[in-house]
Length: 473
Figure 1 (cartoon, rainbow, N blue to C red):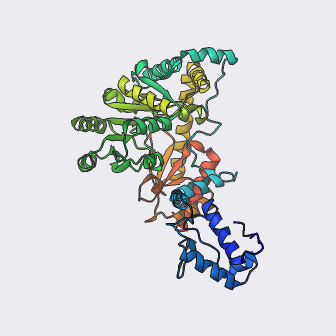
Figure 2 (cartoon, rainbow, N blue to C red):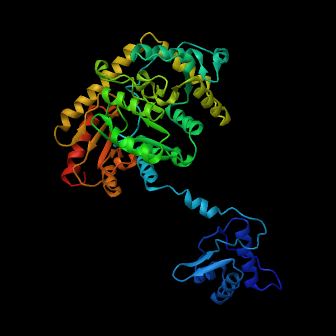
């Protein structure tokens, strides 16, 4: 704020100061509720006697332009913005409401620490470069992409949709008709479109607790009420889910039953069948996020997707980001045609265009004759890292051992997990997310073990052991 006052002949200085403050309120330089400097400081800034400032403040207060509160100082009046004759947006209140919360600040703190090459990055939710499969892409030019774009409609690039359907049929024994498959710009866009097209402000959605969905701001922005349902070793507890359905008129159940984020838990077949039966009883659709479904360590023990058990009532979300990297931003939704039409219309209304470039590149990767071999190799490498971690951690901590995916859910030996404890964990060089980010009060950490090489896993375990001895975790 510039406190230089233009002095004009025959105009008392106190009036010039009043005019300066009033004009700055009207043009938005001073916001409602904003605190002004103290009388002594303002006098020094402008270069006048304090008595002059005392008179200015008395006059402005009488006009209702400012208000003074004992112990709080002098502030621009929230209710009256100077002499403006037109209604003005309360920018100060809007800015205050958008201030980042503690969770956001923690994530920003972690991201800043990522610049430290010595930090152990168990936070980032994707593969390290050395694990991303390398595919030889065919030579192409600009005209090839223009030609490929002719094969794209409202649901995406048709050859890629066919390739995804073939992949899932081969890998999961999951049959997804191409006409019921829509390409999205990653799994998060799929969730966003579902929220925008199928839900209204105030609607209730049941999710697992803990869940990565708590970390997505889109639900809060859309006014969607999330109700967490605790889990046991078989997944979401259905007795508690039914309580939420009856209590809150739940409109959707949204979960990722296979290698759940953040716990790594896989819902049992019996629990999946019971979940489907319960939701059919109450006529509630299920949104199945299967981001890690292509990454089981042993395919023989994997439970079938919910979509396979109930094709008509389950909307299925998948992604290639966990396999070929997030740069391509390729995900998909499988749903009944009427639902896909509504989702694609919402995407067009929101102008969320889908570029042909990543779709063609993803199709080239899936069409590579070595894709299945490289996918099998990727699973084996992640599994080896998990085995090494669990061999080192031993009985030191309670950890759920996942059957696939990236994450380990490590329970702490402390009774609580506070922001201060997380500061200590980050300061020690471990970058990860705490349980409270995922809506859970149980003290635990989510660790992306797939992200770490052998040396980093060893350092991670040693650092965790040191922090435990210090009573931090």
